Length: 290
Image (cartoon, rainbow, N blue to C red; front, side, top):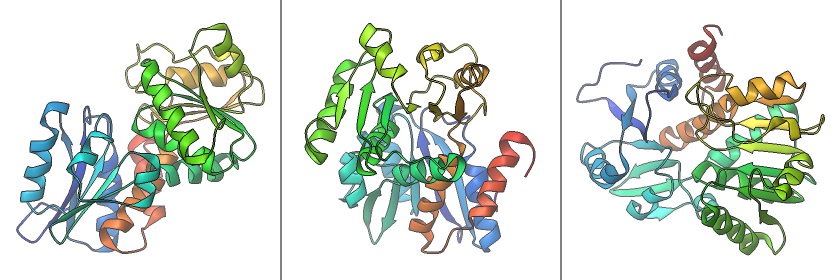
């Protein structure tokens, strides 16, 4: 879990709600120990109404960096002094660097998403139809990055239709009309869209709890489709179990988590991240093995 905090320890952490399931502290603290840094990473459960006060408190404690997760990736932007080009393009922040009295916002989710797909499945979105369920902060990174990587089309659904529509319009403004559209899960049109998708990404929190419903009907998938569930704990969600039972390829969000964490670690420390150490810590946390 890293070294005990003292006056010389550099503080980093995670803001989200909930965060009890997160293995990010294990990943980052293993990396700090490996690099010989007197740094520590802690998970802070921050309810939405307490985001600003928690952020200011962390800043007053001279924390160096934060990861931001559900449901704060867009709300935190109002508290920042500057955004990276990637964060502006995506419209969400998952990494904050405190530097010289300034809070700088970054987004490493998109890079983590692409690197995980390529590393684990040798999959590129170029020329593909990507179906996205969940238009929150992580969903924004997926939609924008897939489009930038050359996806033929990104179809977006969310329980809040206005949020899906806003993200679709955002992508089309950034990359040109017709690159993204919206659909409703469970509708006849939605069934056709899922059936025709090359990649379906579940960017919702569904699956964190064993009794959560599935975000869509896996029987609709084509045999050649790939499903990526961004939930990583548990390592096999009900959706991934159902997908694999049908013989369809599926991966969880662990690879994306590790790669976005490595990119954030580099932003905070200015050093090359010990990626293999971070991977092994993540695997140990979830699977009990390296």
